[in-house]
Length: 443
Ligand code: SAH
Ligand code: SF4
Image 1 (cartoon, rainbow, N blue to C red):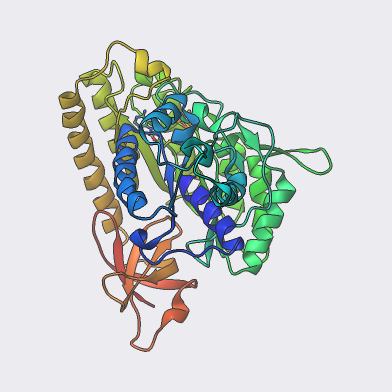
Image 2: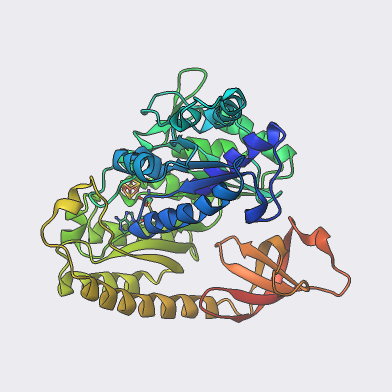
């Protein structure tokens, strides 16, 4: 979601005539889009900001802007104001659309400044409260010509006890189905073949159509499946508590819906899941996986897992290991639990010592990596449809793309194949595999 926000920010600036600097150090404006999900990102942000001070000292024209989820936290904004006075613009996730105007306002204030103008009067700090409004029609500078992210909803109502998102991104708001459909049709006319629908919990999408009819997520999928020229539909993220039989059926009936689902489990112990406020049990989750595999044999499944949530015992953790072995995930994002100020779990007294967290994390990673390697090995000899993303950075004779199941494939083609393969869906014979990717050759 943050990546897509960055694409929107770039798109808006491009529309006003700004151009991207070839090198980080050559820019006149720097924008840092932050994430507050885990502490690591916080630390990196403040480190990077420190380095920008030196550039600012050399170039008084320089404009430093910071945005993203971290700016929706009061204590962060206070810290920035007090300790980082060279930051010119602070804006939050709810007022991205106003950023180009803020930038122009800073230039205008600077042009009118006199010796008596106070430094603080040249800065803009605008972090808005959540509103019901959704800014429509913002441009986006896409990383790829042939694929695109599309927000279908914003915010989250789930309040998992470890998570900061509902506090930074606000309450759930769904876009109107017609707005989503027309955005995707326009993307398709511009060459997009694959869309990834974004939301913190897409399964709770609830949009109101022009005729007043309520649309759920699956209604939207069926409508998108009818768009000519669109070839692949993906979505992220799907909360297990709201994954409906209707959606499982849509996997079978909608040919454009990729046979892949990211289904974050977070933990394998029902006791921990309850304390996380996830509102499903281990059994319910395993049951969903069974249903998905029954309906869509071969569906690729990935997940998110948090290790060392407060109160997690060795037995609880082993339940995560056994669940992972049972599900046989295609891939997983594994995280060390990170205390997020303002969330209920930050106040729990039974925090897990760092050493224990790391030790468990390494055990889990071993199992997940072995599992992914085994899953990938089973692809050798098969022919997969791959949407070609580009040429490998390391070797311009090797193409790289994704299968329907979101597996990364590096492959070779004939000597005379060129860049025209990029953006095409091609058949690739898989010849080799490792933990994180497949290798092959064009059929
Ligand atoms: N809405 C998505 C998740 C968005 S955050 C969902 O519910 O699936 C992405 C992932 O970050 C989460 O799935 C979780 O595994 C991880 N995460 C969130 N808060 C965290 C925290 N405090 N510590 C460690 N990992 C966290
Ligand atoms: Fe965070 Fe839970 Fe919402 Fe996902 S569903 S964003 S983990 S609160």
